[in-house]
Image (cartoon, rainbow, N blue to C red; front, top):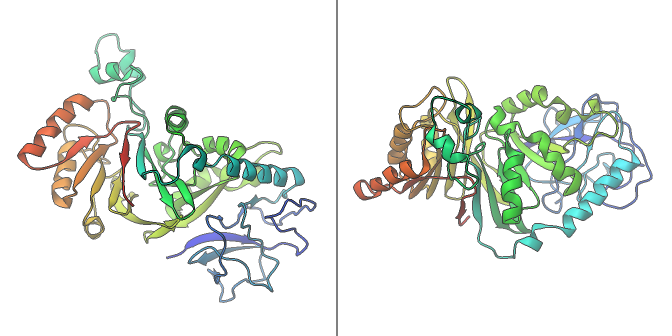
Length: 408
């Protein structure tokens, strides 16, 4: 199924947004922010279909949700709809003033002049970077480090800056060569995302974020959305967020000011985000096909894993539905939730259950993620290494900052 976008009715006098002409001001009558199509690629003349109308562009409303099978341009006789092929724009009822347009245009220029092609040589091997591999609270825990009686050996080790037991919120970055160059796709931006980015982005030469894909709407997956303002204020004009509708409904409450920017005071520079609604059907980002992997993350709570190429990522799972297993066939690299060394919890696999799933899915290689402070990196990996001799299982714990070359 196609993604959902929001288009806008505007006076025909509004200038084309892919030029440096900023001499008009437009005020929408809508009480909500309006998001335009993300320009991942040059826009192609494809037909846009209104979700609640047989007309391509219904003229009875200022705001319309659109579905398309790609990124499109308005029909020649429909100049009242604005689609930017240079940079995306969000417009609130307070209007889009001259200085806002200038800021977006300048950010667009900065983004182009400091693109990843400068710090990442063309033709570089695609890779996965583990931005974080820990639980919601992170490791080490403050409570462990301040306990005067009980010593937590894992947290004590994690207090050392370069320890592989030092873990922040689970997240990966997919860095791949697309048709238009190097792209950075982030899966989840949790509470500690900015701290992870401070540690790994400069180290690995990561500047832009081309998209964020959300697994679920818990704080360890979306708590860092506000911190994306550093990118949209200083590096690039906006960031598209791919999110399931149920999780977008949560964001309307937890991050209401990012969804409806009309509530933001003038001069406040919050994150410029484009929310793109996905379902459980495959979608593409920069020509990379991504297949959602529906799983349960507690009773009645749906979370998404994602498959890209022959790589499967499932970070938050308590059970895998039968209908998801066919999507995991021929998996070469499985990245899977494994919270603790013993039994599972109501919301996460423990290591024994995770290993059982590995035996069932039969990937060529598995890296576990989402580990709590009972999982000592060296000790657990030593145990897992023995499984390669006894069962032929190639399984290990991942760690923050791990880079894995991939082919997609």
